[in-house]
Image 1 (cartoon, helix red, strand yellow):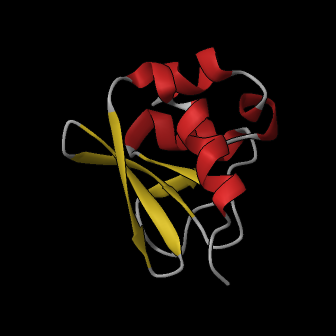
Image 2 (cartoon, rainbow, N blue to C red):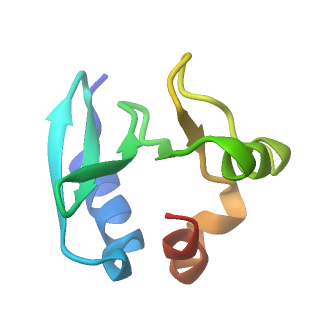
Image 3 (cartoon, rainbow, N blue to C red):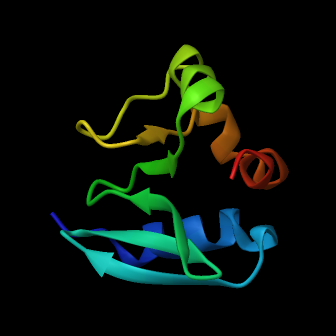
Length: 91
């Protein structure tokens, strides 16, 4: 399943305040970059993940975020999806 245009637009809008963003389609989803560094991905199902480790990964896991396969990406909690300021702070 490929990520939809609506899911791409939602994620790009959610993180707009992080700074100038670019994205690249990969494996049915997208990677989102800020200044050439990937910090987020959107799966083919439209789920948004942040690249993180340590205390942020623990926080996202404790808030219900699921890990993307065995990679260092953790899903954003549902409440964050409604709060661009919080999403950008986490990013």
